[in-house]
Image (tube, rainbow, N blue to C red; front, side, top):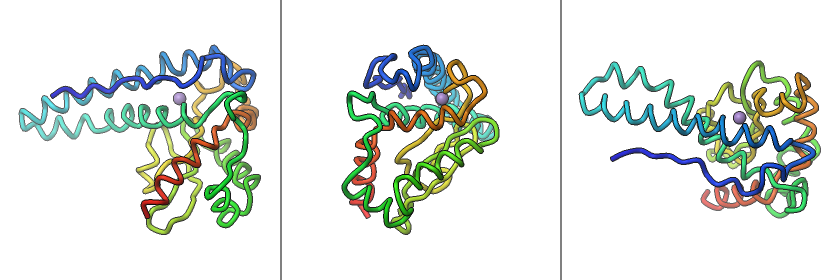
Length: 205
Ligand code: MN3
């Protein structure tokens, strides 16, 4: 009965997103940061299981923030890696089909979406994420920010595209200039992956 989450396979090499995201960032981000979330999630879930076995509700409650933080970190990064692709594999090539239609209809244009996400992502105070999400209750696309590693599910939205704006995601290359990182990352956004997520969830509604 052990919960064993694992680091998902990175679908490209560490240097594949250069020059927009450096090899050094990718390697550290994936092998150190994401791996640590996975390890600490597994540890917290093990402790939670033990607490549950002992009917120790107070201990169960005390573990919830560790599960939220590390579980959110695992969920978010697992989406993030697939939201990106090297330029040679379609990174930066804009969406088409139903997703593009929905963006145009609901947000105005792809340019407007990118601008909104960039502004909101740049404006996150401290560590967090900016997301394009899908609201199942009304079928609409929404841009939302989350603090720390809170997953987008905490805002009632289904994640389609996330941009990690924690300093660890850019500092080695962009130093303190988060806006430059947020501007550059659009060159390697895997819109085909975002569209796939959108088709899957919007078809269910
Ligand atoms: Mn990160």
